Amino acid sequence: MGDDHLRAEQAETRTETPAEPIAPSAPPSDGPPGIVPGRHKWLVLSTVSVGTFMATLDSSIVNISLPTIQQHFGVSLSTVEWVVVAYLLTLGTLLLSVGRLGDMVGYKRVYLGGFALFTLASVLCGASQSIWMLIGFRVLQAVGGTMLQAMGPAITTRTFGSQERGRALGLNAISVSLGLTIGPTLGGVLTEFASWRWIFYINLPVGIFAILWAWRVLEPEGRRARQMFDIPGAALSFGALLALLLALIEGQRWGWGSAQVIGLLLAAAVLGTAFIVVELHHRQPMLDVRLFRIRSFWAGNLSLLIVFSGLFTATFLMPFFLQQGQGLSPFAAGLLLTPVPLTTLVVAPISGALSDRIGPRLPATLGAAVMTLGLYTLTQLHVGSSASDLIWRLVVLGVGQGLFFSPNSSAILGAVPRPRLGTASATVAQMRIFGQVLGIAVAGAVVASRLPVHLAELTGQVPPAALQRDALILAIRDAFIVAIAISAIAVVTSILRGNQK
Image (cartoon, rainbow, N blue to C red; front, side, top):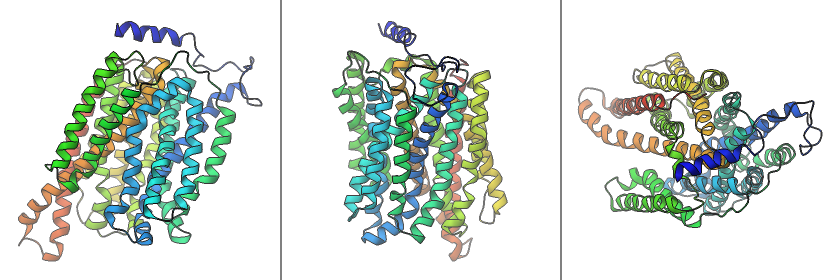
């Protein structure tokens, strides 16, 4: 029954708009006026890239301003952290629902709505008069960001055929790298020379341009007939994801064995099980779990989750190593971390184009292996490591990222029926968020458990002034070793995907 359903959806896609653009000699009658048809697909990619850049920039530009925001409102660190936590929780819990909504009403409608909501919420964030107003508007901003992140890859996959999909996703990865690279520096400049409010106000002109450009470039889509939204599935997934993410985010502070964390994990397990049961019996499920019968889909998503978990276990701790371990300033530490996104920016388009020619398995698996190697080299860092010692290691890590991400995304999105592209795109984003949160949780847990051990070992062996620093460096090294083990598993899961071109 399930396999017949998927085959029917595959057949349905053959009656829809073809993936390849119409040749320039035959202009489409419903295309945007004034646009050269042969270039239209690249213009579509440009508007997706703007949305990707905005969402990525926002996630990296805010963190640098948190100390200033804390001082401005006179609140505690645990309170100001919710400026980031609220955004992350909203994003992580709504991606699947928004992905299904895009499959139902059209990706353009959801994407434009995301731009509009994200831009409006950014202005409201900048105008906030209290910390709780800011946190509330950050939730609204995250809803818009969810719509952008869930629809972007789906629009790209729908626009480009299998021979160009990897290249397009690789070029779109440039926007991710630019957002991660520019965000901390731009946030620091705006906060220091203008106001923390401008880290949000800057989205207004960019958002207005993006809305107008997306409205002009993206082709309209008709609603799919006889569609219904899976309300029980959406409610259960929201509850399960919220409980799981909150347990992972707050587990270190509350204690992993605390009643709150155990209760949240049990709730996530119960709600998650109920969600799967409901989805298997729903005629139009929010998440068609039968997609996980497709090897490229489940292996690619599992690889993505594992890679991000290992990667963020290490990258989350690097600022602590540089600032508390080596005594660098935040600005210097930020500059030293830029080789990762800059290298990814260069390698991702090449890797994506390569995957179009030879299939995704080799470049994605090689990327996971290179990332594992990069994580291993980080374990060799010590308090006296120079900038050049760090930079070449981060370049290796960036090469691995660039090799992995574009082919992996292309394999996942190219394996599903077109009517499920929104769901598949949201699932990719969901795995990325889970990986980030899980990596941060692992990093915090390892450092918290190993730091007292190393303090006890080093007492009497090093000067008291260097005791805390040296123990922290050793604890961070232990976390890097755990990250290596996690990343190595992704090499195996990536091989299991097969080599479908």
